[in-house]
Image (cartoon, rainbow, N blue to C red; front, side, top):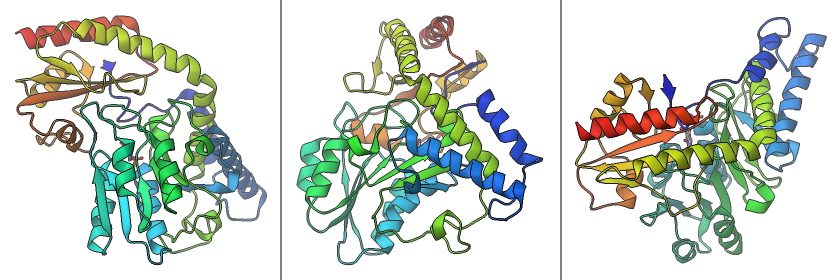
Length: 371
Ligand code: PLP
């Protein structure tokens, strides 16, 4: 199989799996207990917290372990809302993941005014639009760092500056970006940042929320005193350990990995350019190195994906959560509101891919589209 769906999920890397294994067996203690195996579990959790904080330039107490990107996003929006006094506006974008968009819909039902910024046809949010929407009634601005469908990188640092001038908090959903491009929360100037381990070769069902020290947050859940009383529930020690190892290695390898993926991406894109009616979305914007997002006019995504699958190539139409539905993704709809009958395909590259696979994929697409 040629796996081209790394943006949906990545396989757990060997080193992360090996680091996790003892915490399923001889060290499988509750990290809150007081005997020695429990203390080792606790210290493994704290070591992973250090690994995650270092990877994004944060301080260790600013990292809270959660169940993944969805929970981090929910908390990043509901948390400040719960601690909020008078500010009633939230500014976000039409191209966020549903973990942000559906949370915003709920906040609208609770009386918040939510402004949704639209991207240009390159999939990029304009700073001028953000400037026009952020005011002194704005509680929070939430703009993703890299889009999960197009891979387009958004001007988060510039929008964070505008947010802070208006006294608003800045959140970024960095689920697709962490481990793939260098990130420093201080350079970005964000107050809140979401990440998820299964996007950088760690296990599924574990992630983290970075919350800058001093940010006032309510909790999503009620229970025990874990995560300094902010996120109750017995810690998933093996998953936390796996995430720590995966993020540490991803950061060590990031420069080489970015170069390798960008060159594979360029190789594949160059071979696709001569297909009639094909467009590479976000091509003129800054993008994640491993993302290719194609639109082919007059075609259907489900047919294209099924035929690629028959040739052993795993790709997707956009976000994993939206595939299976025949409706066009909200991201492409926002970028091209007038476009009809077109197939969208995301090819997201990763550790297992090599040049020969790019040639096979381009040939397969050409054959499918020409037959
Ligand atoms: N945000 C973005 C941009 C994503 O791509 C995803 C997952 O695809 C999520 C949030 C949700 O993350 P998780 O699957 O860890 O809940």
